[in-house]
Length: 317
Image 1 (cartoon, rainbow, N blue to C red):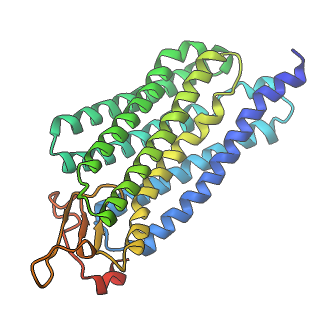
Image 2 (image 1 turned 60 degrees about the vertical axis):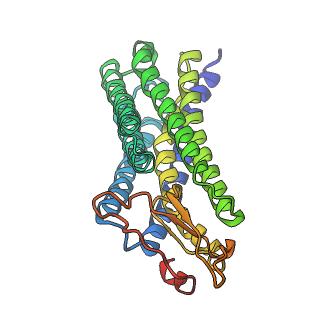
C-alpha cells in the first residue's frame, strides 16, 4: 500500500469525525438555546443537568480542536504522529462514556416513574455504569500504549464499552416503546401524540446504538486503520443531541395540539396518563381529551401535575 493511501486512511476518518463533531456541537448549541428560552420553569436539577452537559460537550470539542492542530498544523506531514493518541484517549472514550452513562441514567429515571419497576431502572443504571466504566478503562489503556498501532490490546475494554452502550440504548428504546403504547386510549388525537413519541424514542435509540455498533465493528474488523475514529468522535454529541431533542420536543407537541387538547410534558417522550372530560349530557368527547405527559409527577416535586385549559395553552409553550 502506498504512503499516500496510508495517509488517507489515517487522516480521512479523523478529519471527517472532527467535522461532524463540530457540526453536531452547533446543533447542540441551538437546541440548548431553544431549551433555555422555552422551558425556564423546568426544575433546577434538570436545568443544571442540561447546562452542565452542554459545558462538558464544549470542553470535549475544545480538546478535539487541540488534537486536530497537533496532527494537521503543528506536525503537518508527520505520518507517525497521526498514530499517536494525543489527548484523544481522554476526549473520545472517557468523555463519551461519561456522557452516554449520564444520558442513559437520565432515561432510566423516566422509565422508573412510568413503570414503577425499580428492578428495571436499576438494571439500566448498572449497565450504563458498566459501559461507562469500560469506556474510562479504554481511555486509560489507550494512554498507556500511546500509539494506534498497538490498539488491539484494548479490544476487550472497547468492545465492552461500545457493545454495552448499544445494549442499554436498545433496552431503553424497547422499554419506552412498550410503556408508551400501553398509554393509548383509543382517541385518535391522543393516540397520534403517543405514536409521535414512540417514533422519537425509536429513532433516538436506533441512531446512538447503530453508531456504537458501527464503531466497534470497524475497530475489530479493521485493526490496521483508523476508520473507527469517525463514529467514535461523534458518539458523545449524538447522545447529547438526542436527549435535548426529547426535551425540546415538548414544545412542538404542545403547539401541534393547541386547538384540540391540553398538554403538559416533562420529558418530551413519556406520557403517563390520559383522561377524558365530560360535556353537557354526560358524553365523553375526543376533542376534550387531556393528554398529560408528566413522568415526574411523583419525584421530589419535579414537574407538578397540571391540567391546562385549552385557551391558556400558549402560556405553557
